[in-house]
Image 1 (cartoon, one colour):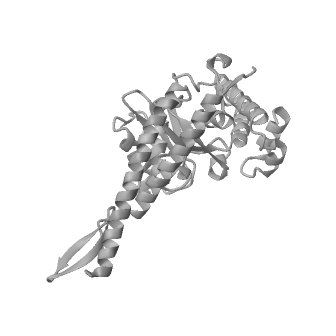
Image 2 (cartoon, one colour):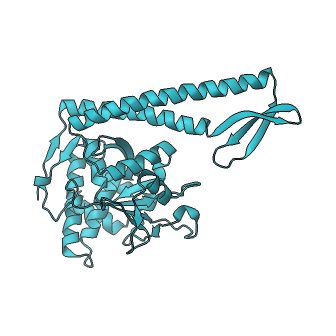
Image 3 (cartoon, helix red, strand yellow):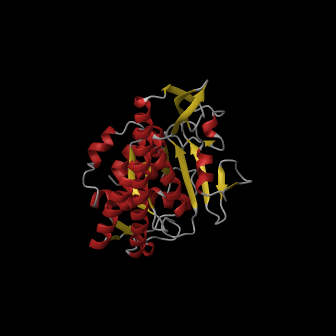
Length: 334
């Protein structure tokens, strides 16, 4: 099967670049705000004297800075002035983002499931996006966006790749690292409180639109760790490729026009792994064919658009996959 890619128009490229610039600025401000102002500052009276205190918004713990004086008043005034200025700047960025979202939809670069965008937007804001990665078919959105092309439905057999048709509503997300002081399940409910735990599996969540999100971890982590509440530990068919894979981060635009940076697997490692899966006899024939087509599609993207990737050179440097898998890929597609 051959694949055809539709390149972005000049207008779409301009729109994508602008969206990335505006969103980067917003995330940078939001992270700076959360880092610098995750506490409040005020005056506390103790025995007829006032003291400047700082209180952590997460733990509610207070720390006395010093007795009220001209110096501490400067600290207090400066804190609140900087906070107000940054808050105003974030509000202005949000206005630009909302305007850009309309342009994203108008120019038709919005195509990624909203649940994926909403989840990773929150992770972007919290600075946690490199700790959680997208695995499976949804990774293809990142590869096509990087190349500035669209993979069109009519060029794919219906049973091969379900990206870009909205019948497959499953999003698989895996932990790369522990998330401090939070659970991915909690973040998922923050962005959409209609998600409910599936009766079939504790790590699977379904929302009102029947979108399915699976929370997984290939890492060897303690199951009783609070960060992994509602998460299933998995072993991926003989290759612990996610645990030490190179990562690929890409701005994606959702159906709503909103955008977010998502983190997924290096495209070449994805192609190698998918081809390896396609020759495993225990896999169902339909799944094997799907794996093969995904590997071929990503390989074609690499060869035609990802010119910075030297396939032969990078295959030699892959250490987290078996020699068998790498050699199979080299002989078949590489």
